[in-house]
Length: 414
Ligand code: HAM
Image (cartoon, rainbow, N blue to C red; front, side):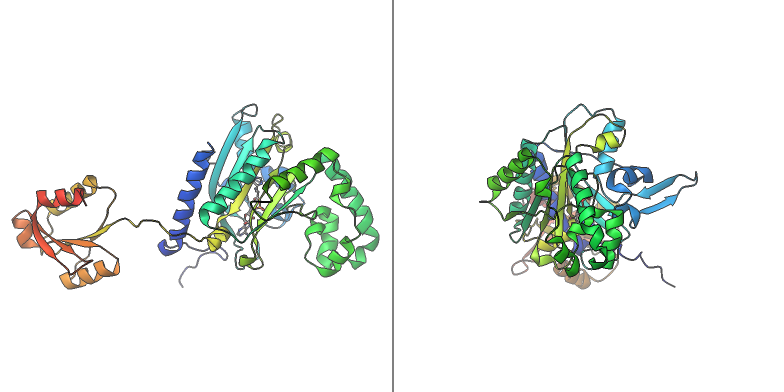
């Protein structure tokens, strides 16, 4: 029996990763230009971290966590997201009073039902700004998101945005929503009846028709948040509405309990059912909830598998590729020295060495298939005379015999 990978945990082969590399390079450029620095936290954390942050009643903790007891009988889990770990790390380093602009990337784990765009191991690239109160940081993060779209050539997207008010406003709204829905609970879809009990705000983003119908007359967030919050949301939307499709969505609450203030999600009609490729918002209370000092926090995370689907960019310039063929009977350590010297002489060229045995013809066929521009051939005779054949694969197959020194010079100046 062959061993398979776990369901919803796909392998990524070189051809799958071409776009990922372009994406990562472009994002690194943008993060650098915003003076945002990388943080790496472990893939495994105590389960308590996510129970206290993302929320015990959220689907992510309640149903989707990969948690298990370790050998010491402690409940640990594979991280389902990155923000809680970043806050935990900053509290642990006693740096809540400083200002941080951080980014991270890596795999996240959620035991969801796999389908297109939804995996059990998926990847996020996220940004967290810590120590900045509501104000310019919201503007800066939306500006960063726009830069990301522009640099990746993504055009079809909508930014949905909402303001959840402070913790008290959120609480009051929640109580009022429950009082409104409870007498009509029978009319809610079955799934939403359960949500109303465990996590009432999630009823708002239900896709069920019967629930949506009921919600038309339900209390609205707008009636519970302060005038200041309403104005802030409006100003933020106005500042960006000429540059992108940005819309206030009062039913947007997001699936993680830690948010207060601005929340946003970006969707694309090109993605099908799993249409959100970025989500984020402010979560000023999380540091306190995790035992840390007061610390403002706002951020977002991109679902890499989803954004890759939308990518509209190619490598602008492909590096030159040279095949290195050892065609002799005898493999000599001198040939490896040459290959190493060539790589040191010009690092911008890809030197593709053909390592297995085979005829010169089959090596040349491989070099063509691998899109080599040139090949270097070293057979027994050439090796004896410290020479190599340089062959052009792009044009009419011109070739010349070069001394090792001439070869290095040619390669250096290619
Ligand atoms: P989230 O909305 O749960 O937010 O996840 C962010 C993004 O990760 C989603 O928009 C989606 O693109 C992607 N994603 C989530 N689950 C899956 C899955 N099963 N398969 C594929 N992609 C998925 C967070 O995780 C927050 N930590 C974001 C944040 C950072 N808020 C503030 N700072």
